[in-house]
Amino acid sequence: MSDTTNSSSRTAKPASAATASTGEMWLFTLDHRRLARAWAAVTAVVLVAGVVLGLGLAFQPLADAGAVETFRRMYTMHGLALVALVVLPAIPGVLGNALLPESCGVEGMAWPGLNRLAFHIHLFGVALFLVAFSVAPADTGWSFDAPFAFGSASSLAWSVAGLLTVGVASACSGANLVATFVESRLKNRGNLDVPLFAWALAAGGLVQVLAAPFLCVAAVLLVAQRAGAADVFASGVAIDVSYAQWFWAWAHPAMGAAVIAALGLVDDVVTRHAGGRAPASRSLVLCILALAVLAFAGSPVHWIGRTNSPADSLSASALALAAGVPFAGLVAGWIATLGSASPRPTGALCAAATAIVLFTCGALAGLFAASVPAGALLQQSSFASAQLHFSGLGVVAALYAGLLQVSPDWFGVPVREGQGRGASALILAGTLATFVPKLVLGAQGQPSRTLEILAGGEALTLASAVGGIVLALGLGLAAWSIVGAFLASHGASNTAAEVAP
Image 1 (cartoon, one colour):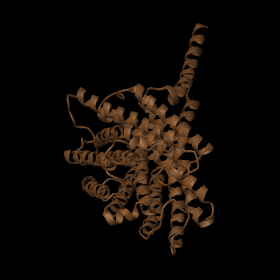
Image 2 (cartoon, one colour):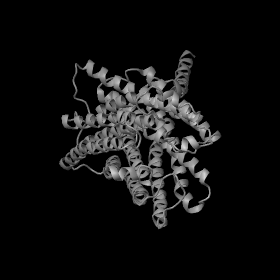
Image 3 (cartoon, one colour):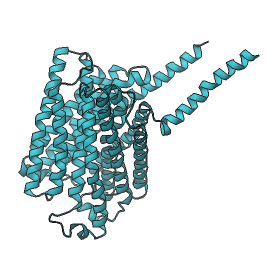
């Protein structure tokens, strides 16, 4: 009798523990691995919503040229969802939590409580955006630039609050990444032999922390200028103070930090396929640190300079041209690494290659726009929007490469290689087909945020819309490949439980 009772209690305890573990995993856990999966789930939902909005934007100019207000609201929601909720936080939140402690040789994040708080703040920001999109969708574009933000009759309070909240969450996450890296190096007596991904996360996290105050000031200035009180901030100051200066003093470094983290992740995939996770070479570390310095250097350029002034444009162009040197150094290092190892083209490696191509396209477009005359003309055109999309989708492709790489550890089964390679090919083809026509249209004078099609640009607009379908199919296949691995792991677990005595 006693043996039977003990057996029953042993059977009941794991079930109770499993139930508690499920609840803890989503909301209250301090385990960085579980938080990584929670970040991944939230990011996936937002990415799906952003892609659906993007498809609507692609076809609306061809279908209904009169719904200008609807188009602008969809444009704003699409930009805020993908930039603020996917591109900026995804890699630090998902794969930073999953891989940084292992890369640094420590058990967990330096500040587990702050790590969890960053995720909770991010969830609150997602909720604010959901309210904004449902109740008071803005029609200004994701950056709330003038004259759209100041002439708009729509309420911006919920959207601005959501953006500010997400920015604070990214800063908290970045601070934790930096602290984890520094603490691990102190424990290892200053030994700096860690993978490049760890350097990239720490460098990008530091940029996020340093740039966050600019976003806070920008939010205050936006509210003040809409209320007609902007002169309060400019009185007694020797320079012009405007919302756009402060916003882009945050946005450009924040985007740079996301790209730096993605480049570090690409290096992690490449080095694993080349035979292991060797410590990063000093030359590649210097390239990453140079990119971080140049990314944050955009803050004082925008803050001190007047928006659209010749000096501001010249400084921004110089930074863009200078960033091409360390980026080229990273690409050359990866080509040399892969050339010497000749690895098998797995799904993860194909996704990393897709990210490299997309970042290269964005960099080449940036070099073209870096010439001062061209930059002034292209700033508000579809060219600038396409360049941003190349960088953002490069981050998404790098995130997919990292997820393919960690899937055996997360799910116990790898993603099917054919699906990974196919998704990568579709993402690359779809992105090129969607945004190369927009580069051409922008160079011809096609403005962004408008339903109007440049004369003679109907064919390119249609080609871009068809490319959007291919891109959506690629992202859908990528999502299904990850979900399929998750379902396969649960199916294998249930089968094992059924056959167990």
